[in-house]
Length: 549
Image 1 (cartoon, rainbow, N blue to C red):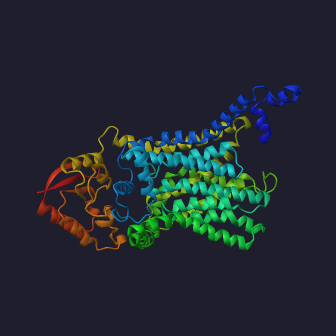
Image 2 (spheres, one colour):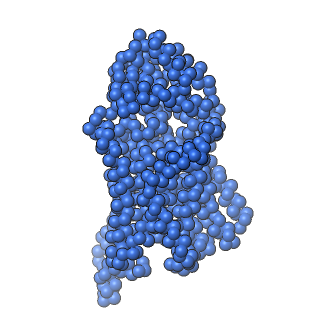
Image 3 (cartoon, rainbow, N blue to C red):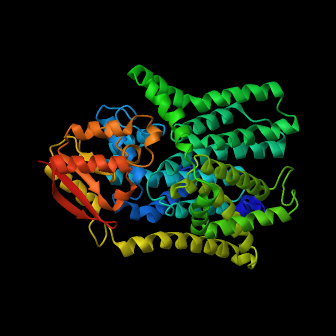
């Protein structure tokens, strides 16, 4: 069915009315009112999709509001953001090996929604909804239908509840920027394939700034940024509509735009006197981190677990790619160029491969790393669902398409919600993290330094406690990733304990993850200067709060 036919069917009386209307009545007397009504309808139509994405995001991610900790990394960003609001700066006062875009976004959410864990989870809701909307835009930019675009966006939102995606980690925060950049690039590629037109400078500028914003959140998106530029320029370069000199100029401009947000942060840190730590954290520390990468056999376990977790979208994506491979390249194309489904399948497959390289780059395979797959899997999965829906009768195709994606989304929610409901933390049972924070806050003065040896750093945030060190992430100081920070961690740990913080928090369930020398140092300090003041039951074992004698 053509788009013009669809428009006539949407308003079946419009064509007849136009044919039978007298010439004198062609302009109705109430023209301003009709124009106003038309404007409202257009506004409502434009807002319908983002509103649907936002509602779906809140519905699927509502359980994120119940627990204080879903992934430990999120707590570090919260501590950094809180420190920023107090006048201190991330990296200088709270060290990490990620860019400062994540704590910057979280600081804004704390300003908007209040200083609570719920504020950062609401930020995650907004980011997931924005990514779903961007995927809808990507499908439409390629020439795909509204239903296909809505399906891709909703599938992404539903699948983010898995792989610890309910936490507002970097993969959730940079996804809207990358998906929007991919939408711009896909639109440019479709325009070139259809009309032979070269990419426009405004499209390149928009894509470059979007990728730059994502790079200011996490470095691994650089590979996806390269794919964005390739989609923008390579089709036109191949067709000869983009001269080599203009291509090189665009490449230089794109590189500058991608680097601009990070460069502005670097300038701010230089003015603050912290450029050295900024450069070390963003460019050197990630290489130190990747030096301890997992071997192939060890990596197979998290990879296979992620694939099993995302089984249904992976299968749907496989069906979509297989259907694309067996169809002629020109099938369904209108006015020349590639068919929308052909373009979407090619873009989705390239995006998935690029995302896989980004996941493998750091050398470790934590569950939330695999969230990078979700945007491409969602586009390909929607194509696969559409392929299966075509097996039904024509009148039942939309119902079949919605049913396939609905069951897939419901299964994703069930697989995450069922264990959470069974554990009951923050629902039927008290939240141990909040209990520890309450115990710390009760026994310390506001802003007084306490030391969390090997428990969740979000306790600093919840208890409004002072920081005894800028290395508040346990793995960087007392755990296995001590070489990432490039300091003498044993000396820093001894200095912190020698400063005699009023409280020391120890998680006995995670005690085996401490370095042997760190465990010995902490044990000696506790025996010499501290008394056990309280314990909180955790799933792994007791969490101990030790108080200075």
